[in-house]
Amino acid sequence: MKKIDVKECVSLLKEFDNYLILSHRNPDGDTLGSAFALKRALDLMGKKTMVRCIDEIHPKFSYLWDDIDNSDIEFDKIIAVDVADKKLLGEEFEEKYGDNVWLCIDHHMSNREYSENLLLEDRAAAAVVIYEVVCGLGVEITPKIANCIYTGLATDTGCFMFSNTTPTVHRIAAEVMEKGADYTLINRLMFETKSISYMKLEQMAIASIKTHFDGRCALMTITREMFSESGASSSECDGIAGIPRKIEGVQIGVTIRERHDGSYKVSLRTIEPYDASKICAVFGGGGHNRAAGCEFNCSLEEIESQLLKVIKAELK
Image 1 (cartoon, rainbow, N blue to C red):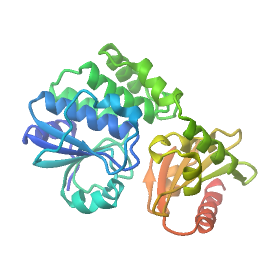
Image 2: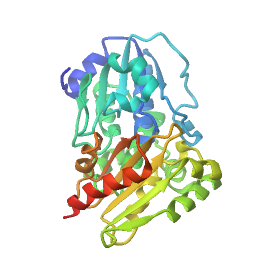
Image 3: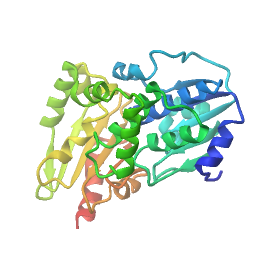
Image 4: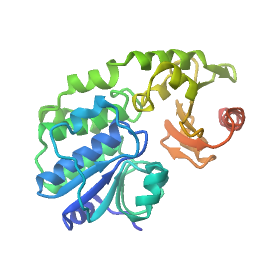
């Protein structure tokens, strides 16, 4: 497998006519916005595509696809978007598709390079890479494509508040706004609208927060019981991992979320100079400097013990 540039990626995409586009499990706005922006662009070129994700997609994202055909097709090649490691496709999809991914379009420094790889690690979001690909394809950025790209930009930069927000991000956001992106609707859906069930879950999650190392680290736990009691689904919780870092004085925020199968997903959010990806790499995970994740299949107590040991060393 090799790294390619945007020009080579564009040439590859022109070779075939039918594509399966995969997003990562626990889908967020960047993987979904990027996948549907690419689908829409390829469809405009007369190709046939379908986007699939192993997990339920929250209805708030329905504006990304509600006017297009996303039914099953016979596909020639598989593209993974914003998927740094094929295991992030989810167990069933990894087994079914993982070894056959033909092209990966991504921006994570932790990318495992498991296929032909358009990897631009300095881009703030996969949506930035997709924007460059769409421009390279010569496809018009319609208002619907603009919605998809804006969604990826806004969600991966925390509505343009995270440290990965660059002048380039603002320039692309301005361009897609000019192309018709409904940024008012998208910002409201992504950042201002929460269900009652999610609010109940957030309340329980906040009550679970514990601080360590003189308040420099905060750890929040979300269990299956909390999901059950609140009625919330994991598909509406993509922004919850940022809560612990919002506490005054916290430099490393940790969210431990129990999955339905009893495994755990850990999300880290840090401020400079602490490297979230470095901490998660100890446990086989990865991501970005300020935001990263890893997985565990052991008891909650053991997870906390292992994480705090590494975080203590990092804080020193």
